[in-house]
Image 1 (cartoon, rainbow, N blue to C red):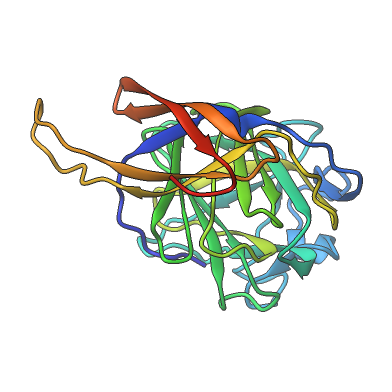
Image 2: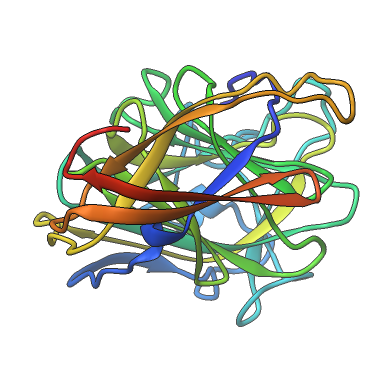
Amino acid sequence: MFQKFTKIVFFLLVILGCNFTAISQITFSDNFDSYTAGSFLCVSSTKWKTWDNKPGTATDTKIVSDKSASGANAIKIASTNATGGPTDILLPFGNRYDSGLFKIEWKMNVATGKAGYFNIQGNNNPGVLWTLNGYLRENGTFEISNSANVLLFTTQYPKNEWFTFGLEINLTSNNWKVLINNECQGAFKNTNKFVASLNLYPADATNEFYCDDFVYTYDPVAPLVQSDVALDNIIWNNIRFTETEDNFIFRVTNIGLDDLIDLEVEAKIGNSTLPIDLTGIELSLIHI
């Protein structure tokens, strides 16, 4: 199920926010190769559900074999409706988590001229809370917004090829790391931090994307990170004439154990990259 979003193009990459942590327990994986091509996903699997809990109907999706990242099968999420749907599937996480360390990743393939959408639900009952919205735009821009559809993060994704998208979420410290092809793109803080399920939904007639190789893991104890930061509260009016000046505001939160003295941030505006060096800030678990 889809939430409408007003686009604001802005991206800040916190270089220091790309530390990685290990997770001890794999709770789920699925590459669809144990299912029969042409069968309904939510009929074939006891884990996947439809939004309306009606497997084998229009809100379900079928296993496909025309394109896959590994093995023979994958799933395709597509719509011919201007308002999206009817496909509307859920991958429940087994519980509603708001602490610990949660990681999810899967492979996607979005063809040239096509787009995609997904969200993370924050309640075991879908439709109560959209914790996160992910928009794969036709031009290769990847946007992530919160439950109020405020833009949190922007990066780029490859078109017309398989790539791995991942989220490493320290729910305890509310630090969300974004990974593309296993490379950290940056991190942000979210307005709320409940995670309960992944929703795949084609938001409009431009949406057509393949998915494969889903894995999520959960550890109830989030390890402490020696040096780490998160970025949020970006304020910037991007509606400006060329060669005019403007200011933007952002907040950096120290979520690691070490005090931060120097920090490097990159702002990417269009095709331009603006380095921002913060020196002598002495940030100790507070905001600047």
